Length: 188
Ligand code: NI
Image (cartoon, rainbow, N blue to C red; front, side, top):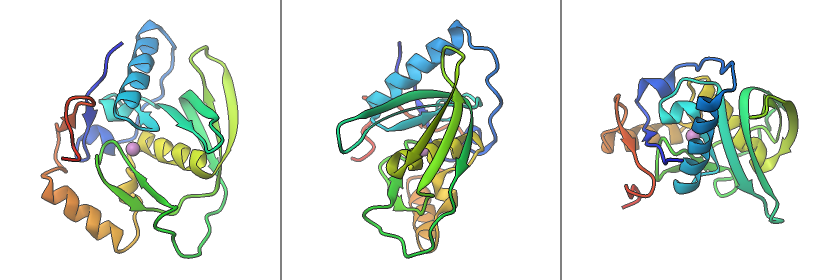
């Protein structure tokens, strides 16, 4: 297994729709193992294949809820169905998220409260998860990655302006930039 470099916003692979995975072979199993290791090292609660430079409709996730239950899995060629989103004011503390491709930053974003994920696991079996709260948010965030959408693209005023400023200031936003979990300290 290996930790993979994570692409930073601006790299074209992050901003283009990904392709169906198709066959589950040893190469794919190695990729998925590396993605889980990379997510753990980052650390993050989700990682999509475009973030490691591969335009494939695949993401991994691992999140421990307040009760200590670990929600962990691999979603190959997923579909996602979401409930209508609320329109009451955003709660900056409760509704902020981040992204390993915009490392070290967090911004408030309204997501749907419920999401149904249908995907294939590494054994080739189709499964369905009805998610609420933070797990629903993770699924929406990672699913967006497969369509070339970053959460920065969804931010409302004034956070859209702020994230654009941050990306300029850090000289991101162009092709070919990445960071290495466990080696690069991006919060410094
Ligand atoms: Ni992300």
